[in-house]
Image (cartoon, rainbow, N blue to C red):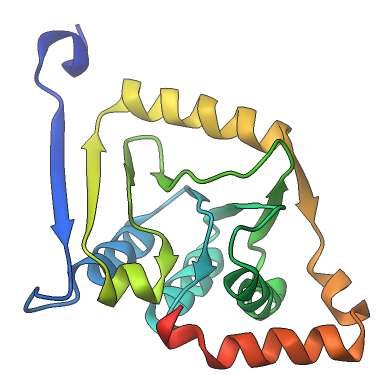
Length: 189
């Protein structure tokens, strides 16, 4: 029997917030990204990572880790959506694959690392979740649960279109200016 059937699944509920002595949410994501050997699959409505998370994503691809990020095609926050394009462009040459979810607004916040552990909760890949908001994330170390997460994310990728970062260079001057302006606000987004 696997751990889920016997009630022995290893899980951690990680509550984070601005009152923490350390930036616990950001540290968790950096550690998870640095620990990956095979894959990191992320689904998040807001992708405005800080420098440490951005670097961890770049290092993961240099190690040959399959990094995929699913984002909503339809934003609920236009400013955050614009800022995310700057980060997509930053990772364009690093083999991070981005997908735009087309089946409505995707608001899930999940991450699958390798074939063993996954996380889901309220924390986004943005500075507000890393430093400003009170968040909760369940981290589960269980292969059967990870397989279910994998199936869910594969289904989400089927309802998504791959986003080609080279399209960003074809944006109008004003759109690119808006992206860069939104990026300036990323510490509070």
